Image (cartoon, rainbow, N blue to C red):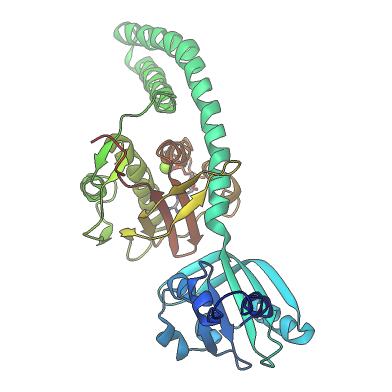
Length: 377
Ligand SMILES: Nc1ncnc2c1ncn2[C@@H]1O[C@H](COP(=O)(O)OP(=O)(O)OP(=O)(O)O)[C@@H](O)[C@H]1O
Ligand SMILES: [Mg+2]
């Protein structure tokens, strides 16, 4: 037990009939806590830590920290500092890996235990969920500026564009073979600009119509589209939770979200020429995924998740900080609107999107609300 916790427990005996067992408090804590002994074996873990690491307490009892965290991780430095200073040390943005999950962006607080020389209490916090909510609010701002721009473009560009296209088409009939190539080029490029403006119009601020949507149907629809078109050579794997409740959302927009993610995944693996191109679609239900809405006392429940994972080269370093902003692309013919539209739609649904990417493994994960009793049927 950390000194802080045992002190908190120590306050109680005089007040009630009996002190609450400190192990019971530890197990009720919604924050993952692990206790390591002097040899970095797991001495004790709470329920939140089992869930967080995806390994049961009895499994962890057989393991040492080295089985989960590579030897060069700064986590060992933190633990050494705790042992040397016998104080509390914190570290941000650490990574933890187990056979079942990879966690990045973890904040770890380490504390020494006076009663147990060499033992260290670690409190783990997944900062990525909260951080991605922050980021997503920023993307929504960016998306809003696109919606304003789309309105201007629609007005100022689309009309003259159809004039240009019409004129090129008229010329096409009267010019010779060599010049016809040029008129066709004008027509095709005008079509390309029109398609871009049409895509930007998807950012408009219209309220969305929501119903109970079966996410698996959405995923299957996109998988079929992909396999008969742009992802013909990609192997798809489905890890679906069959008991998943419906999501409260707009079916067409959710198709658009998944389609953009699957398209990016396919483009990444096929461009890189990966030997066994694979996309894994996952769904699941995660209890207790509640997120505070920044600046309010409101909390949203997002128990349903959908993952789209690929074994491509990963998101280019220079793109990462701006990933969800409009017009950010590494592709010669990309518009860079796919992910900003995804972020906007997910935001409009009251959801959240997270990314975890490294060479060989990129996963986008959506967290969405389910149909609640107060939603109209
Ligand atoms: N699964 C992925 N693997 C690697 N890089 C990715 C992946 N998904 C997105 N990216 C990177 O993020 C960039 C932005 O993606 P986004 O979908 O917004 O635009 P785009 O795909 O380039 O263009 P558009 O979707 O408008 O055709 C991509 O250009 C690519 O560099
Ligand atoms: Mg894209």
